[in-house]
Amino acid sequence: MKYLVTGGAGFIGGNFIHYMVNKYPEDMIVNLDKLTYAGNLETCKPVEGKPNYKFIKGDIADRPFIMDLFEKEKFDVVINFAAESHVDRSIEDPEIFVKTNVMGTTTLMDACVKYGIKRYHQVSTDEVYGDLPLDRPDLFFTEETPLHTSSPYSSAKASADLFVLAYHRTYGLPVTISRCSNNYGPYQFPEKLIPLMISRALADEPLPVYGDGANVRDWLHVYDHCVAIDLIVHDGREGEVYNVGGHNERNNLQVVKTILKTLDKPESLIHFVADRKGHDRRYAIDPKKLETELGWKPKYNFDTGMQQTIQWHLDHKEWWQHILSGEYQQYYEKMYTDKGRV
Ligand SMILES: NC(=O)c1ccc[n+]([C@@H]2O[C@H](COP(=O)([O-])OP(=O)(O)OC[C@H]3O[C@@H](n4cnc5c(N)ncnc54)[C@H](O)[C@@H]3O)[C@@H](O)[C@H]2O)c1
Image 1 (cartoon, rainbow, N blue to C red):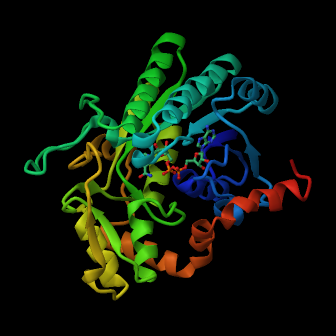
Image 2 (cartoon, rainbow, N blue to C red):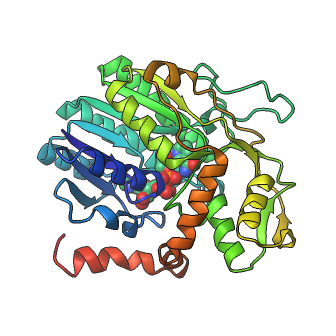
């Protein structure tokens, strides 16, 4: 089997690449990434040089390039992680979110229709469901919850999901979609809550918390997300959506306090800042369909996952310090251009 994994130099795609290259040594895993500010090839170092792994630099929204690539490579399965993924950035500049998240998705699917593939999988988010009230802990997102987005990011992701389902119905493309809650774990770009707070706490710098810190997220360790996608791609039913979540609801303040406590840092580092515009209050996933149909069970709960993640950041300071200093962006030049590999 030949897999195209897009966005594999990002956080979740990078973890998925590690998982797939090691789990399926007989299969070929091709990583296509544009290397935006969020793409970091240092994340892929552990698999570089493996015979079943290849990196290609490119944009999923570049139609001639994508058509050429599919013509040459003859992929069997496409798993699309590539996206602009940061809500705050989408509030500043929505257009690139439409281009990559919506038009990139339709471009990839047009190539899938033209060249024929066994499965197209779209990595989506629970943010397409909007948010839930804080005072109704009995409510959860199911796959039937109507789409009701808040930010330009989630609107672009929801649009892409609708196109994916339309390509299934209209062109018979064999698709699946996963909608996942907030991920955390190794190799997450340090603009997102957990790695940002870990890096700032380690530097004894103030930890900025939006509003009153009461916004609730359903935290899922990235490893459990990778296992879920592998199951859905191989055993999920075509045309279906699967929610992925670990029943690990914590508000932002609880997350920050857990980090400070684990690192033995004072809570006086917490610094409340003006709330994000349109800030979603609570996300909470009901993953019953994935559990009952495909037998998925998360390996980590919030406590074990956070311990693992904090320890990883302590053991891999170089990785995130290179991002903070901007050095990570030179890795591609060093590894690929200088050696004439591209
Ligand atoms: N991080 C989360 O908590 C979370 C939760 C649910 C769903 N998701 C979804 O999972 C996917 C991956 O998220 P992430 O957190 O790993 O994101 P990320 O920002 O860490 O990585 C995105 C990757 O996509 C690449 N990319 C961006 N535009 C591209 C383009 N036009 N062509 C090719 N590559 C491009 C970037 O270079 C980067 O490597 C996204 O689709 C996101 O919507 C993320």
